[in-house]
Image 1: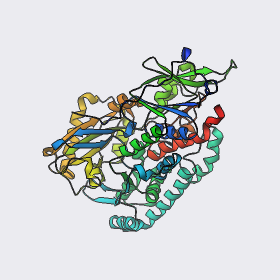
Image 2: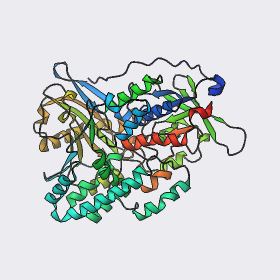
Image 3: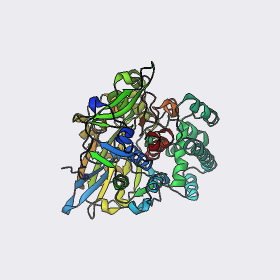
Image 4: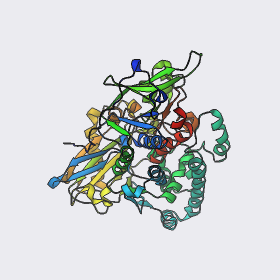
Length: 537
């Protein structure tokens, strides 16, 4: 039976319901302006820390019973009173400086709360024929690994990494925390987009430089980490190769949940409040005067309990499509209408099997990608045809390779993640989940986990149905909007809402996109577009 490590219930808010759902200003109350943050995923936690550091009184509302969102933690009983610990989502931490910034805002050091370990190697890719390609932090070791597979591609690999470094400078350093409020913001970056051929896909860029198909796969799969198809995601995402090289692939001892818990502690230690098991039904708005065309202004939230909380600003870390479709009244939306949301392209879904084994598999690395027989065709089935194929490729996570404490003694914790179509595929996951899990089990047993079926000590699955039910993800998509050139920067839902004043968005569905670094940067953007608390008093 599944159990959860949940934080203690938070103290109920002292705010009385505002008359007719309208807010009373901070100046009228004589206290600090109030920021209400919806959702305690990485984006909401980071936004709460940043708003608190900028003088706001912060209330963070989370509908689940613990923080983390996609990064929450599952704990399942194991042998001899032990537990298997599973990070539900993100397991790869890059750009640790973004976390260090958050701790510094509260006068602390990340290392005081989180033991972050740099991994070497980063991960191993296992091709269908059993050949492997191991990626790590050393440029010399990477050149040697490329030469082992394809000696003629070493020079091309170096050229690709040089382009990746430039993509990182232009796309991450210069743009990741830049607001894209107006079309002119987009126009400023068009020369770089054009010069660097951002219209080309990641796979297309890799294929320009290396010829060996195994290397093309091994160097182009990164967009899948952020919900993108390597054959259609803009080549700007090639920056991930350089990001990994300079920032490393890191693991938090105890799991990613330790980072989540540390962020929650920063918020609560500062005197701000996190409330769990609280569902927001509506973002409340008011009109500023009677001028035609004036935007509504966010002034609070209405909860499913009937309670209303005032707010001087509202930040939504809920799925961007859910925020606009479900949390705002139709009359408050001009750009992000249901019709526009229906036309948008959404990322793939995920099927994740979390399992513990009653033996250790010492030959399996911390991160491994187990590829199936098809690459381009499988991705076409997932992203375009919306078909659940019989074959699959898997990301296999074995955190106990680095931290044995995440399983009982002599045991391993794993999760196997398979990209699948989102819910538009019409797959009945209630009926098909177990047969799909069994197929994954058989594939792993035949390849890297011999004898698996005789050593399963815990099992838990999540399908796109769970992403929709638990995380309110549109279509059960695991990463929100698909990262296409036509859905990036100004074309994504803005961090400062286009439709509602004093409403801000963070998370995978807004700029700059999915992945832990992107989500943390979405909160960093708010420092540039949201008023300091002193401006509202």
